[in-house]
Image 1 (spheres, protein in one colour):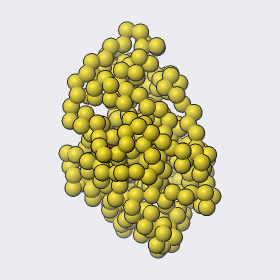
Image 2 (cartoon, helix red, strand yellow):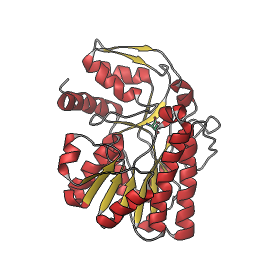
Image 3 (cartoon, helix red, strand yellow):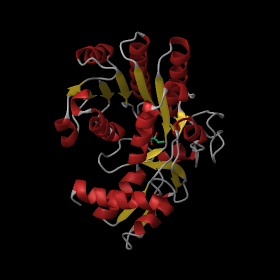
Image 4 (tube, protein in one colour):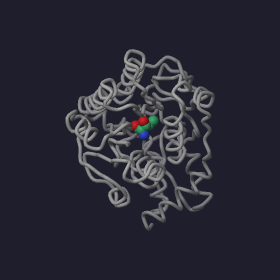
Length: 314
Ligand code: VAH
């Protein structure tokens, strides 16, 4: 059985639906601090639980005879800058609980998401390597870098089968993201359909690594299904698909909505974005477990616009 902690978040929601489709609804238990969308709540078991409360998580693992845990609960980059200690405790305590459950053989496999936020201003910005200088300057990035070190430590020291991906900015239409710096690339599609214009909180030439959610979900499941001996990186895998700027994204939208206009009003998130890479080298993931992305920018834009119209009746 699979437990998804943080099942109502931007990744968790779609990951839960994909895993239920693959493994059977009753075999995938969703939990979060709050309820999720109708599709998630009506398709299988759901529990309210606090990811930082060990007893609540352990109770679910015992009650539902859980084998694998996907820990998707976290406070993202922009929000964690506003609440540093809350961000640190949520991101770290939840990870220790799940790693210790695995160390004590109460569960047998763990997925934990890292992020390109582990890289900082001193990291090579273009085609950032799998192993390189990492001096993150955000609370979120620091927590993800520390988390990667702990994942590798628990694997080496206790044989815990924990697997991780450094997600780029993820773009999806089923669930709104919360508190991320890359969220402009989701909001822009909603605004393009609703008002025909968008004010970007990042400058027009801010290039960031991005990925459509379908690719991210497929990558997550294929990493978790790979034979253990193929998973050579036990900190976290670089993963890449696209990299674009707000002005490139706006041009892609104008192919569908010619009158769409964008303006730029950078805020505190500009400094966060400036500390991150522009593009990522994911050759380790491609070599170790045959990763390859399927969505390019134009295909993603078409999917996003049609998906928003369908799901949000815009
Ligand atoms: C954020 N969407 O913006 C997340 C992600 C690389 C970006 O970590 O914080």
